[in-house]
Image 1 (cartoon, rainbow, N blue to C red):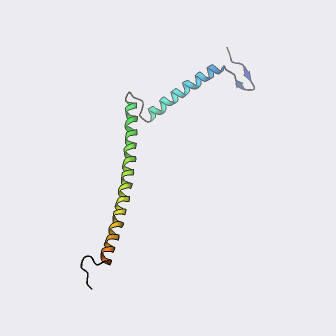
Image 2: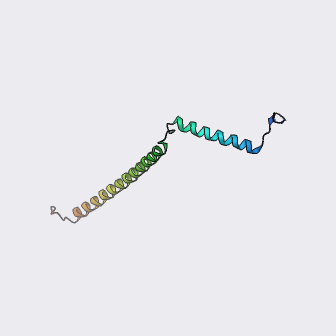
Image 3: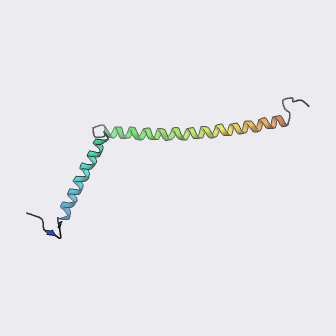
Length: 95
């Protein structure tokens, strides 16, 4: 049976069209995962490992920023204390 044509378009039932779309999406997803090497039995484990790696990178970045801020703050505080000590001649400066 040939599908009815109207103005150059093919008409088909909505259920059949949705089934074709679902099959095409599934095949496309499988092909995309295969292209990046995530098509085996351990694909879920690989994805969990990648997410864990990204989380670790974020943690390292956040920790590095916190450490840098602490070092800068400590340096400023030491400079202020050294300036106060020099100003008050705490360490026996010359008269």
